[in-house]
Image (cartoon, rainbow, N blue to C red):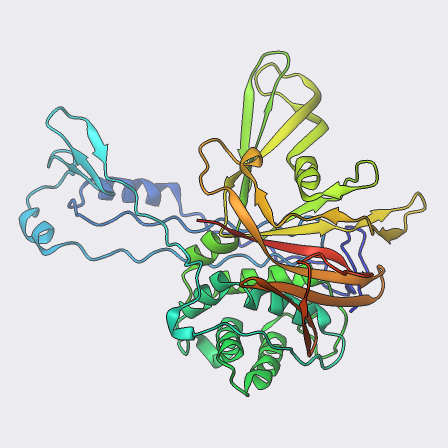
Length: 439
């Protein structure tokens, strides 16, 4: 598959009309007088034992260096359980939660007057093992009708991951409006893939058709023409689409595949420490920074998490000088996707592909890039999407781990790789690297 990069470019996948982003939803502000009335009304409500509502997920930022349309996340607020019968029958005389000795949103008031909050509900987790009912997971090739190797390689990478299977398995199939649901099509395709059904090829074609029908006409993979596109753009599109599906628990895909950072810097004049947080995203796009001609995943992550020479204004002393900003991972996903930025610009403004070798370890401990107190910081290499070619053309393949065996997927062809994930790469270079969190 091939790719042409726009000026905020990526690797080889033809960037056509996919550069714009969805406009941010405008939220209508209610009149101030109405909000005051509602605030007064809330004070007089009867206290209930309802659990707190989980906050809606923050909207994702656009892919760092690709013109990826960041569709706004659907606000999937958790349903508020009905109040218990005792709360409805016995609290009818209490018009003020504080006067009644209780507080809403899961808090309790002790005799000393101190409000003690109930522990927050645990976020949904994603199982890291294949379901016992599935049997042995399979490896199968996929037909590439034209220039869709970028799709097939991404699907092979995701289909080799039990966390992705389990997220899709939680999707309530058949309840989606209109019958054109990409997540439903993914769920059927991955189940047929691992069950050995002969209809798997038809389900992959149906997935392609559903993507075309449900997407925007300006996006490369939703038009009727079979163009070459970027694998990372397509990977991010699938993760975002599954998260936004109405009949999928969005917290599961967030816990499974989304990583989030916090950034901090210290003012050298007044000592003020400033911290900001970033919304979750489906991958980390790391620059390749060879040292003595060699790069490693660790050196790429070091470069990403430390930014020097940033001119930032201090809110404490109002100074405006160069700063050093440090990023830390605040949300660790079950599947960590690393996107290697394999492009650079010449002095004449032309984009070129970076073919530097990057050492990718089988085991990766990310504790030094995570916030203090993070647990389960060790990951194991699960799959890779690789590219051969230049900025305007090329081909994608995938490699994935199945137990102790590594399989290479080249459209319909599958083969066992002897010597590990990075053995005999030839002209292919890793582009998307996926690690699975260890217990």
